[in-house]
Image 1 (tube, rainbow, N blue to C red):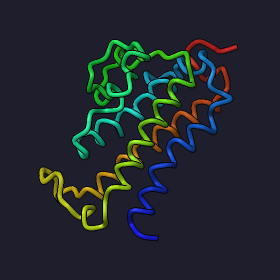
Image 2 (image 1 turned 135 degrees about the vertical axis):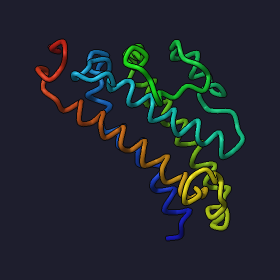
Image 3 (image 1 turned 30 degrees about the vertical axis):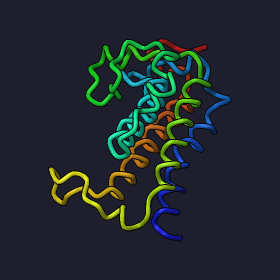
Image 4 (image 1 turned 60 degrees about the vertical axis):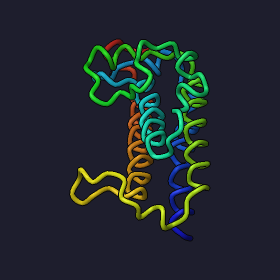
Length: 174
């Protein structure tokens, strides 16, 4: 495998992991809080949004969020480039989504855009420094890894919450 093939495999994993949750994602579970401000809905929304915004910066293309109308479909009171990073408690708790299909469709569209972008790259593009504010400077390849790794972490957190007993939540779920 070359680096592009590895990144392509990695890019698919957040969606694959989220799809395994589909049957358990009820509106009640999506919006429940396990004594924490981030719900499953927030975690899945954020996983997609953080890939989307970073991919937009890399590719120069409009984020999937606005280009594909997910901003309107979700109907959330968030800015067009908001992705949840740095959300205060009330902002995180305001992310309420009752439709698991919408969350998974959004993540699927973002992953599809990431896969399309990866198909345009060669290995030399991965070594290009894209952010020299860090030590060491961030390459395109490192940014692509961190995007998928962050999304995987958040989907993993959603899976962990989905496996909690009802007593683990602020308001016990039935």
